[in-house]
Image (cartoon, rainbow, N blue to C red):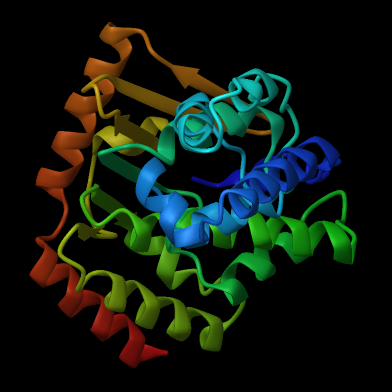
Length: 276
């Protein structure tokens, strides 16, 4: 999902930092470690740290669960409603990011760039550094921090089923150069070894396929609701209409059937790496 298509302007994070500082103060007042609080709210200690540092947008569910074990004052659920700024993420992407953080299933097909969840730092920076209008060094750092934080999903949510379909031309394009592409392929191969991550490559010689209209991104929430997301130049759209989501599910299923198997995809990735 190419959040780099956003306006590239990190917004102020005072409200997030303030909320995080209150969470930290309450946690320490009650003598809890981040790991202990994480057990109560069903998040990792790293995610708790990100919330306390103001790097991650908490949702209402976190605020309610944390409030219950940190005094039950009701302050956190009330405060979370005023959090509207998340550095490094485009405004239109934040609602999807909050859903993504709790998804039990996530499907991603892209034909423009390697999805953000799979990107290496070098690949992401190659994209950020060529943005128009140009980004400042601070903006590039903020966008990479947000991207790296999102990527924790792949490690912190072992029960989430991730599926990625990559267009072969994305890798042959050598964004950032041969060295960056080699590192990217190695990273994708490593991720493909995780039990909950399936990576398939759509061969370059595939004829007509359902992804010709653009990327397809779908997720399933813990209450088994499905949503889709569509992003273009300077805009993004969260899709909840059941009819549209069903159509995109059908197209994604067809894409998977036209892609190489996971095993054959690994072989192709190794072949591509050897050609660099």
